[in-house]
Length: 154
Image (cartoon, rainbow, N blue to C red; front, side, top):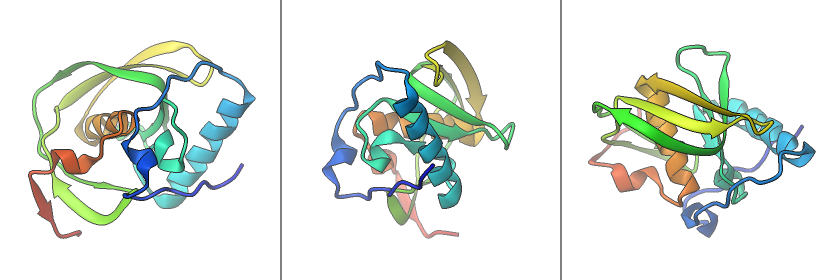
């Protein structure tokens, strides 16, 4: 496997809507493994394919409930959400910038796994925030669009 370069704000790939994944083959599995390695090395909580220059609907999210689990979300969509939280977010593609946002408190995502099998997952807290954040990347949106106030990093 290999580390991928994380593209940063200003790269137009981050502003484009991603295309659906149609082939669940060894190329996809290699991309997923590379993204996992890249995410862990960057100590992030989520990573979307456009952040490594790939315009496909694929995102990875680390699970706050089970720290050893990384959700592989292929062709994901948010099918339900409730409540409200105001987290401080950052982004691997916008290093050093943090901001308060408004996100749902609980989010349910429907997605395919790396083999194409559909599943649903519901989470709250930082995982819910991350689901929203990473799925925004798949539509060419950055978290800055949700920032209500920029804050200094911890």
